Image 1 (cartoon, helix red, strand yellow):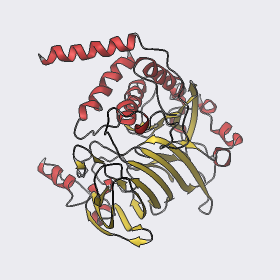
Image 2 (cartoon, one colour):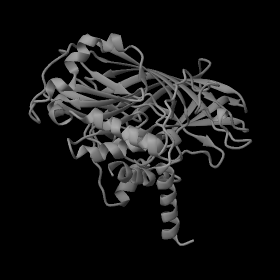
Image 3 (cartoon, helix red, strand yellow):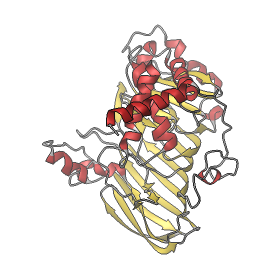
Image 4 (cartoon, helix red, strand yellow):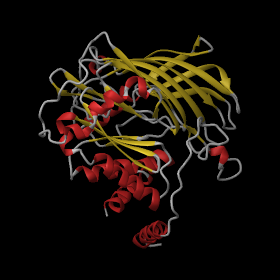
Length: 423
């Protein structure tokens, strides 16, 4: 079939489906991924007999050191082998390890005529380091090849079995010349925003087509197993945080009195770029731990900034949150209400949004993660960026295909969604 005709038929089919879409139904959020009550767990909606995919349960406790600009943590990963195969080894992504001399990404850039400059940590090979990987308190043999870590198992994981990995790791922030998503930048005098993305050892996908999908990270697309995340993030007490998942201890870290002071409406008249006020004074001895729970996701990301101010709206019980640096708050007043319109439009025309919240965060970026997007700009121009990055939560987020293998299903379809949403 002629390619143009085929593409037109596909688009008309999508438009037709959207035009006659049923009224969206609110989704009841399950407590756990593998629950029989989870409408999105693959075993509850198998597309064909014999289908399988792997499951993960991730528990992370991590702490940000804002002075050394590092985040250290312990990850406990329960990995369920639903494949028919016996696994004698497993592989993990250490995405930040691509940002150092000698990596595949370094080689790619140099072959394209780019000479990257590396920061103080990267130049020493300090990106993400793993102290140990243990199974039943016994260290396993690991081999790190830049952004891929191989774990040779003492005992194989047989079909139908599960194994619990305990991983101690440390990830370093840096400021080399190569564009990266995990970054830090100044938001005022002695004030720094930290974005925590691709920051923990993330197990590779083992699937029915490729086996282990252990591609080196080339600063492009991603692919992960679905499951459940429980993450505790400890930071200096003056930071305001948002992340993938539901905040479990909101009354503790964001009490009503503080939430009122942080409301974006308080800063409606603030001139663009004017220095932020101090709502929570910095004290190096005081910490807060933010606790999050997320289901039906394949990744976990977070952002933290002492100057974040909060806008909030709602659509069918879904929290729609705008998170903006105070110096930009005057031009982010409609961020949450516009976000709610995006969720409404795509839920009605494409398919119901599956998560309990969505965040657009002022982070000098344009990138998507489950329930969280890092953005920039101001009204009205940021409407396009919001629509695009939030639109990624349909294919990148909820479908979660192998983006390296079929990139068009993510970026290509999201570009179509962006035009649809803006219209």
